[in-house]
Image (cartoon, rainbow, N blue to C red; front, top):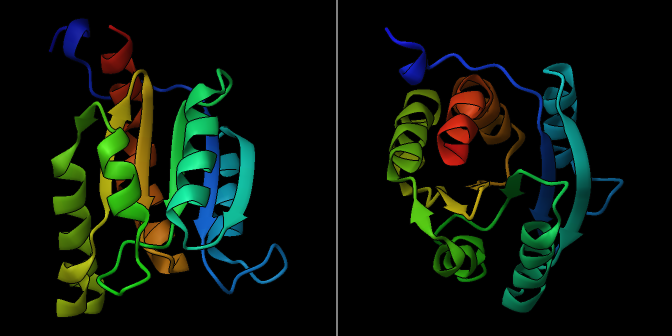
Length: 166
């Protein structure tokens, strides 16, 4: 395999983590804190960690701030990807994406199905690119965060960002 198409690029990068919830606080949030722990354990940094309500304006404002922050390369959201009336994260972020990474959501749902059964297929987890930044919208459970980070995002983030920067 040529160096041009290596799939194992290792790099350290910077993350922003946005928890979307009407009930969680900095004290009670587990998924955001777990994300920060996992990200740090792999040598990455968390440049921003915020919690906003299930409100389209609040989500868009936070995401736009991360997109415009040159110190952030990867944005993770936690919450708002279900089918409930208040689940607006995926719908809010989808129009902001320059390119959708459909394979992420498909593979995440497959892994979720393996872990929790049929309920996993109803996740609307989505990923995409805005400029040179990757955005991953994940369900609000800590298990979803662990699965996405350890089985998909962190093992492949080096290659993804390498491709984006080419």
